[in-house]
View 1 (cartoon, helix red, strand yellow):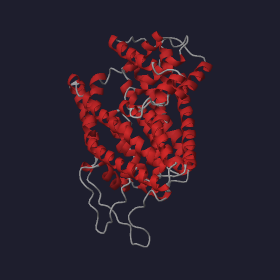
View 2: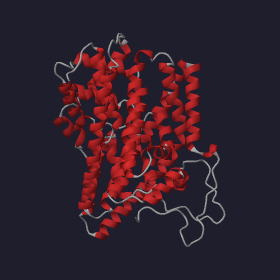
View 3: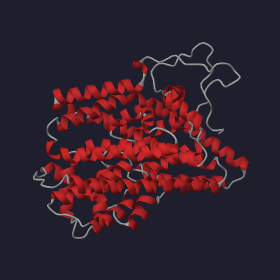
View 4: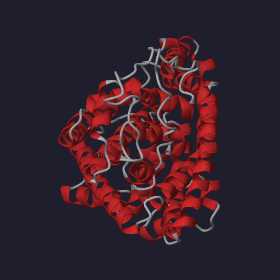
Length: 480
């Protein structure tokens, strides 16, 4: 694989050089943990003051969203156009979409099974507060405007202008534009195509430079997000909805460990080693409740771990719209919780029909706090009928809205891990995975640190090469 370099040193050139181990306080994940711990402490000690720090997390997510569209556009265009073969790109896309569809069906089914087995809404007696009803009404209005197949295609899938999706942060529409642009570039002669791809790669380098600056604020954002969450909900105020949260988090854990674990084992790697590889990104998600905040880092890390640039550039951005496993679990579980909380039940046939509808409505729900709630509202509104009247939807959403941020973290974590596994599986399926490199990285995740620091500044202090060490591998992140 030409796209992904090998570790410094090779057989016949002497022993493989080693890098001096970095001190723990120089690594991003350490400071994210400090931020999370400080936020929890402040939320418990001074909850009223802690609520005022929510703006830190919101501002960080706002800045991340600024560059998510350009990152997706550049990586997808480069990933497809650099192949120079639309048939090959189409085959890669079809394999990825087939995998996404399978995981979506499994995740939606697991949400239905968990809701029927544990029935978290049965016997629910708590009434939503006026504030929760107001928030739920807003989510319902947003969701109702997105319901239906035709509105989904016209309003959510297809852009109305070229730059509109970037302004509105519409991931799905940016993806459509990127695919169209990549196909147009691929049809040009090789010389012009190469120059255009090189120009877009240069723009990507600038974007990754912006990301490097923004990521310095990740620990502060984690502090603000956790301070608000603990200050708003406290340690005991979630008791009434504890079963719903436990069932949701438990179902996500089973999906990751069992379903993704089996998929990973079949593909030749361990799910637990994969989780260890992306632990920094998972900690950032815990603090910010947003999987979008780590999208650029995943692009770099997975390419550095052995997946080809083309596969990473195609699967990760596409997965952010089509492979949202945690969101799918949340949708079916949340829908049945609302029915159960209202003292009713859905026949199995109706539940299956709802799950089939959610295969469509789950697409395009980006991993930002609140997106899952909006998608749930849209799904219930689209299903409609006697089971989900507008009044029942508003009341049901009001019951969930108070704990949505806590559940949002579970959705984002599961979505992230699911997309990482999908990238590695599709890369191997497509013959574009350097398995030796992946094995080495999973055994020693520090092998990707040089690329991560070059692209994202993942640690405040530069890595000091050991004696005789060679230059880091080529700038993977900048060309992701």
